[in-house]
Length: 225
Image (cartoon, rainbow, N blue to C red):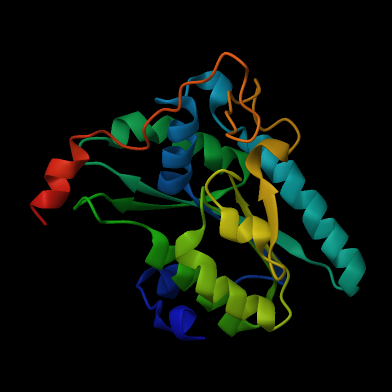
């Protein structure tokens, strides 16, 4: 398991031991970026995922897995996020709300533009796998592309794998035979309003605007690297 075993990080040494579990890891920065691309800007309250709805969905999945395996399986959910310099006060209410719902939060300082939480997510999956308590994995990421190889390796071992994301961005998971894909919007109650999604396969007669995934100024940043 090349990528999984390569994911060594201090996080895996500090997470508490887990019960037999169905593990959800939520890639907040990537999902926020994917949601912003669909909306064409920062999401308003109506378009922010409701984590109580996600929690209820995960509880139902763990219960179903318990019945299938004959083993009591606990859901375990962690949101992985970055904290920008000076941004603690902005993000604190959201983090506290997540913890009140029952989610753990792994927060990492955003020290560089390329500082991300992918290695920490992989390290946590690796830890639970090494403990022998892992009965299923749910990775929530807009495209999930960075997790493709390790998730396919775990699926080959017989673990049920689900990727939650947006079908516009995760074609590989939608097409995968080994991995189940679930569009985030298909979780009951996760958004207060339907997302304003545009599909090239079903355009309105009058046409539609497709917003850029990133600003043009990103080209200047990339040129310097």
